[in-house]
Image (cartoon, rainbow, N blue to C red; front, top):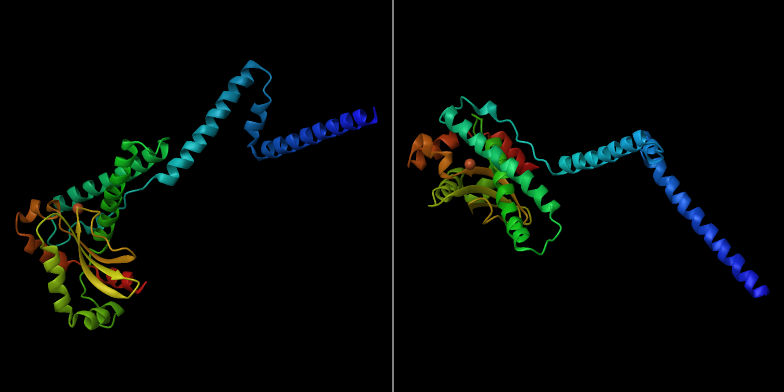
Length: 260
Ligand SMILES: [Fe+2]
């Protein structure tokens, strides 16, 4: 009998403890809710239950907005480049539009991937592969437009100039190699990369947007050599476009990328 009473009391105590713990958890969660949601939780009437649904809707909306904020990329404004000698305004405006497409697609694709519940499907895998292409298309254009709009040559006292001198022998030798990289047949990018592991400067050909990047490499100077970057203005004369590119490099930006 004593054992039975002890077991009953013990059971009651456990039950009360569990109830207290559950209540404490509920109270903590309730306190974290915004006041309108707290009211909605205890809605006794139809009107308030209706409000409850509105409150839940608000929470979902808040969450959706939060997720959207995390995944959204915003196109940057490069209209300061309009009027640049050697780049017609229609060419630049078309290029800005194309860049904005990569920004939108990066945002949409990332949101789509996050919304997919089964990451083992072919569709998920295909979109995952596609993401690097869209994202690099966005970032490379930002780096490209970002290193345009300058007039002054590279400061000979800068760390970058000194590094080019010691690694290539002369600025002209480096430039010759960079131009040769940019004139490789095909569509892509010419990049001056800094191998941060060893401090090495390397001119690199990037095929499309996503093939050929150097792991741990940091992009210093970026030149777009997709056909859309020059053909509307220069036709097949890629060399003339490259001359125009070199006349407009903002070397202060490029030197800063190197010294950062
Ligand atoms: Fe481009």
